[in-house]
Image 1 (cartoon, one colour):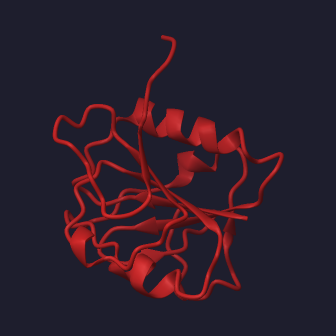
Image 2 (tube, helix red, strand yellow):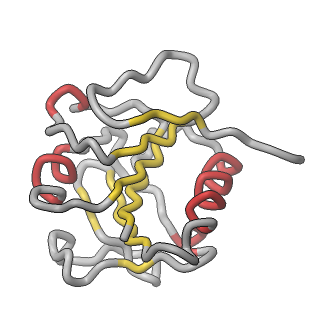
Length: 146
């Protein structure tokens, strides 16, 4: 299994083409891995197929199993602040899956996050400031083709 966390805060500066490219890479893993999708704005939540939030977002027993094209149903949150502590300091406690985070890198509480070494940060290629989290590996999202 792989957990994919997507930043859905209203202030997210990643472009639609970058989201599509990031999820294109995720979809390339679907033949080998089961991908569980979570969303983050001020809280962590599990999305539902109708585009709304799962009311019991802390329940890892009811994951959103990602299928090709599901990125199109993800809705932007209402908050401009992205807080990742609910994920890294609670949700991932005692878990061992690889985590892929799709974000613009503007994370309010980055320095307070409990390190989770199996993290890949997919960060907007348009970001001009360096993104240097204290754990994980960072890759910029690259748009290829037209």
